[in-house]
Image 1: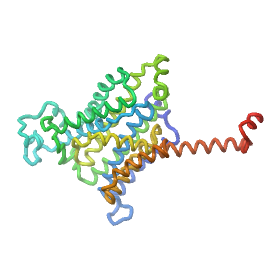
Image 2 (image 1 turned 90 degrees about the horizontal axis):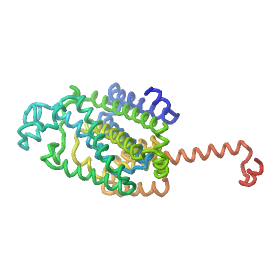
Image 3 (image 1 turned 135 degrees about the vertical axis):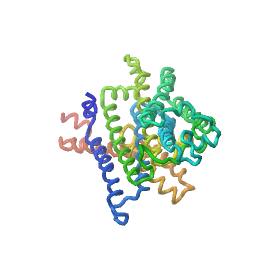
Image 4 (image 1 turned 180 degrees about the vertical axis):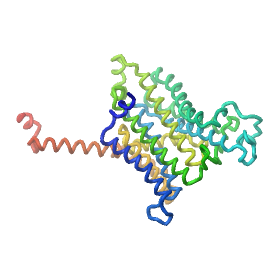
Length: 386
C-alpha cells in the first residue's frame, strides 16, 4: 500500500531527478575510490564532502518547499530544525570519541571536562547508540515543530506574523545554545569527531559512503514529497495555500493540514542536519542563525517555489556560486546574494525551474493551437470558427 502510494507520484521529471541522484550516489564515490589521483576522472575526497554538503542543503530546501511552496507557510526558522538534527548526530559522534579525547575521559566529552562537569547530563544518555541518535534526529525537530505549530496554527497566525515568530524561535535557540551551561559545547559546539559506526570518519571510504547515503536519502525524500503533493492531501494543501478561508468553510481542519505538513518538513530538515554534521565535521550554535534560514528561502526562490526539483537545483547552484565567489570576492558575496534574490523576485518570480516549465507549457499550448489551424487568428475568429 505504501509502495503504491509512492509510485503513483512518479512523473517524468521526478523519475529523471531520482535517477540522476541515484547515479551520483554510485558514480561520485566510484570516481573517488576506484580511479587514480592522476586520472582526469578522479574526484578528490574534499570535493566529495563538499558535494555531500550541497546535497544536505538541497534536502533542507526541499523541506522548506513542502511547507512554503505547497502550503503557503513561509518559515524563517527551518535552520533551527536543521541544527537540532545536526546536534543529535553530533552528540552521538561525541560519545563515540570515548577515552580518545584530549582529557582521556571515557564518559565526558572534552568540553564537559574543561567546564568541570561532574557527571554526564541526563539528556546525553542513550546517545552512545546510533539507533537512539537516529530516532532523536527525527523526534526532536518533529516535536518542536508539533508544539510550535499546534499553538501557532490553532491561533490562526498567518503571513508575515508567522514568519516573524518562526525567526524568533530560531534566534531564541541560538542564544540558548551559546550558553556553556546548556551542555552542548557553548560557542565552540561539538567537533573533533573520530568515527561513525566504527569507521574512521576521515577515511576516503567513509566520506564516499556518507555522500552516497545523502544522495539516496535525498532521492527518497523527493519521492515522498512528490507522493504527498500529488495525492488528494496535496490538493488540499494547495487549497489551504490559495484559499484558506474557503477551505476552512468547506469543513476541513486547516490547522491539522498545516500541522502535519510542518512536522513532516521539520523532520526532513532534521535528517538534512544529521547528514551535514559528519561530512562537515562540526556543529555549533551558528547554524541557528536567522540568516541561515533566510538563505534557505533564497535557494528555494531561485530554484522555483512549488516545483520540488527547483529548490534542489537552487540550493546546489547558490551554494556552488558561494563557494566560488567567496574565494574570489569575499567582501561582496553577501551583496551579490541579496542582489540575486531581488533579481529573481523581479524577473524570475517562478524561479529557474518554474520559469522553464512555464515557457515549456506555453510552447506546447502554442503548438497545439497551431496544429488545429488557428494560428494567426484573433480570439473572435477562433470562436467563430468553432
